[in-house]
Length: 361
Image 1 (cartoon, one colour):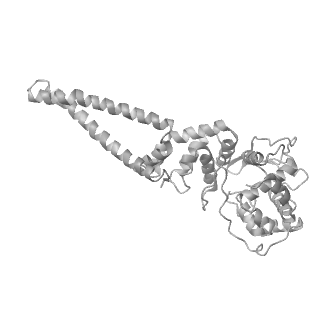
Image 2 (cartoon, helix red, strand yellow; image 1 turned 90 degrees about the vertical axis):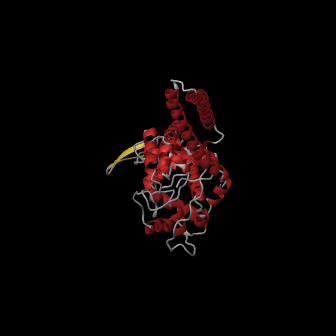
Image 3 (cartoon, rainbow, N blue to C red; image 1 turned 30 degrees about the vertical axis):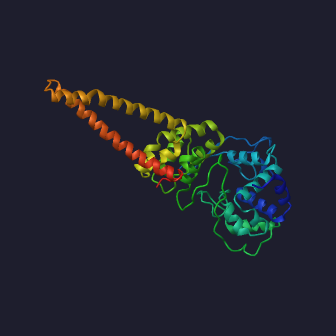
């Protein structure tokens, strides 16, 4: 990622400064108090730090909860990422500008901004700021013409392809500790936000569930209940800001994982995922020991029941019928255990051979 020194150098570029002004206009924070503005229009008392709490406002059909604050409406988790990466010691205007440039660079749009490829830069940054044209989050957006006018008024200049609307590029990867990008399609954007929150809390499972998976909506609902979140946006905010919430979401989704795996395919696929997710961990060792204990018990039952039953039949002993009935139950258990062990072994061995790089169908 870009360094703080490189950001300070880039901020001397008039196109970048104009682009930041355009973002503030789009987010509704271009006024004198823009750097103190929080979600809903309220003002911060000071700029020592991001408020790191949420505001809930009524909306058509429900409510919207967000921790967005500052000139660029940073979410609490987003600000924490930028603050850590750049060593920002307050929430003042200069540091907010630096953090905004850091986000632009994370979206692989900084080069386009600096050279005046305006439409390309807007398309790339629409995944970061929900007010920009093309943003997939279902919120009201500005038009490209409005954004272009603000950019020009602030002194920005266009490069050779700036007047041609462009499709956004593949989003830049985000650090593992933060919300992970998922494949973006023309789907419910709120499910997408929820899946990103799950992926940040539980990357070994969340990253395997795509928006097309039948399990996607159920995963998000489980996570919302575990986090006590009012909606998907609130879920993302709470997961990013509170390690305890992240742990609760992780535990809740893992508790339902086998049912979710059946929704997305199940059978051998679930065994493959089980091996990929838990091989070598504490959970895997517990399962191994429990399974071994069950098999030892079954082996003891075989030795204790089947030989006496055979001997009773040969000796015409009156207890033969009862012993045969017990032996039949033991043999049924043997067959079930053998089939279960074979199916699990087949799935887990395939997962091992593929380096545990298996995705849910």
